[in-house]
Figure 1 (spheres, rainbow over the protein chains, first blue to last red):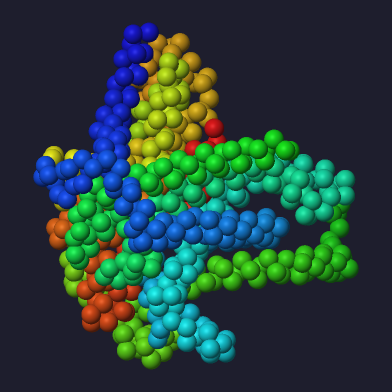
Figure 2 (figure 1 turned 30 degrees about the vertical axis):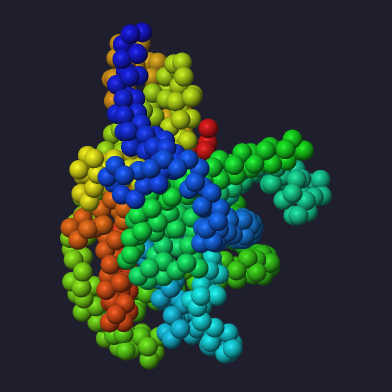
Length: 296
Length: 294
């Protein structure tokens, strides 16, 4: 028994040490730092209580960043899941080559985000040789082909399209794996009882897939709220305020881009708001999804 | 002898008709799936093709094949910024990190999933909860910590950050995998007088090798493409990884407008993960739901 205790301790020690020092400690430290006005890594921090949070509330750029982040979370989420569901149904409709299609749809997930941002902002949206412009012109949609997809008023929507395209593949894979676990006898029995495709989808697929859907929505929420890389690198040189998310604004405040700002306490307060949002969203989702399951 | 009669032409045509009917029924599904896939493949293929053109050809005839492949673009991409160094940095950082991640996560995941002890469930929850923490929260406090340890803007520092922050996800998928392993072999080994360590090294770890491979692929691809932590912890001329290098290249070529060479840079960063994906995509795809199978 004592040997077993020693095994538990030795096996858990390296992971616990790193996790506590480089993950838990900085996370707690962030909460502490968010109560300070702190401009550098020397000891000039001044305790200001909830001041940083009060300022965030009045900071227009933060509100815009938050609204962009929530737009990605909610509008993006609805579209991503809608498309993922639609493609999953098509893939499971008895066609050939479903694994091949799935592999291609998932492909963007393994490409470096920095390559994908360049691909979209340059290869697809470029106003002269861009694929979208040329594709639209080829289809005879001349008036659409003159749209400037990276202009300040369009850039956020253009970015959303790219983010959706990347993520759909991941959720297709997730949903398909869930559907593959549903026993086919259920569908056969339902067919014998005269159920049609729509009925089978709502009475068998959705309820039995509920756990997978829940995991998927929680994953999407966490990833959408912390989204940084795509908005940061979508525009060259400096991220555009039109595509700021909370994570990008945090980075700009803390580390700056061309012009460092170094408002460390303020930036960290954004991180804390982000975590609180994650926790809130996960709690709400758990409630909502659980109630639905009891209805069945 | 001739118990199997050859299919008559009638039967054949009926079968073909059935198949045709099925195909027609599926036309909308094929159309949409082909459209989606074609867009993805075309966009990536177009970049690869354009990386062999001159920028002037790119502007004049965006959709035409390159008259003759222009490999100078790769030369420019490789040398406009110090790509060979960035490539080497990525190889070093990613391979050492992946090995360390597995060495550290696997024993922890094993103990958490196979050995019952007080608080094991709570501990698993604490470890996996890290997946919900957005990295940006850690940017500043972790940077301050690394500064105290004199590890900012260094490759060992970046490796340390990568390993630590990859633990929650890796432990999550590995516990999901260990839990599915049968306990008979474990019990038999204990009866045969194996120590707990021997059970782990000789029985469980080999059994878990498919799970370990999946975890390794995910971490390799994730870290190879990783960008935000490298930006915070290693964004100097000497320590940049390939992702940061491509970003630097893009900013450098922005002024000259040499898009074709930029596309060559994209191809350089994409090739390793795409090759791994082509070979191991089934392994990866099946791994996505591994952790949630509990």
